[in-house]
Length: 265
Image (tube, rainbow, N blue to C red; front, top):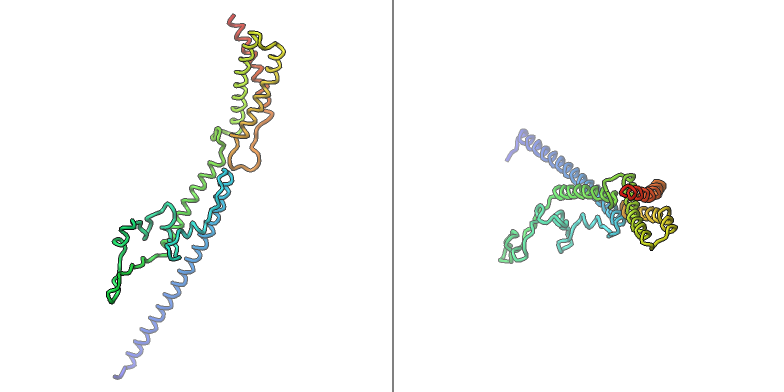
């Protein structure tokens, strides 16, 4: 069979186009693989940073448990050494191409392919798209970032009066301790009225003892419940202001009590 020059040229052009298309496809596939590897490396670094931040949060709240970013990224294995992908991440069961089915229904749920020569049916492997898996992992990393930011905001707030400013919190705590000392002062005044406490002891407690108790009580409360879980350095306790509040309010409460008693007589 004789091939003309035109047919030979057309065949050569077709082969050249196929070769060019194959080269372009190979280049595109190589670029896609590089992009996937770069995305996986970036996501791995991101998850490692998240694990380190979770360790810091655990140390701050006293519940330290080392986090494994690599384990969270890979997920539990399938039993043959292969990772379970995004569907294996805790809390994301039934994601993507990995529906969770009961053990008794696995044989009915999984597609099978009949092998030749009457052999037992073999389970067909489910195709996994790396881009889909990376996108699912990225979304879960974004969700983890949001929850981590919320946890950090909560950790930066103290247990006592979390939405108040440090100054307002300190004033309120010192004033509350001074008010509690005022109640003790009334008890001492009543005890003095029945002769259980003499005048010198009553004056000493009113001028020095009860204000000091109120001041140190406020100081301890601010240090215990007014300190955020995550804070750099010691939070302000406003010691001069607390001293002034406690050593003024208790004697002023006693003076107000005397004026009230005299006014009622």
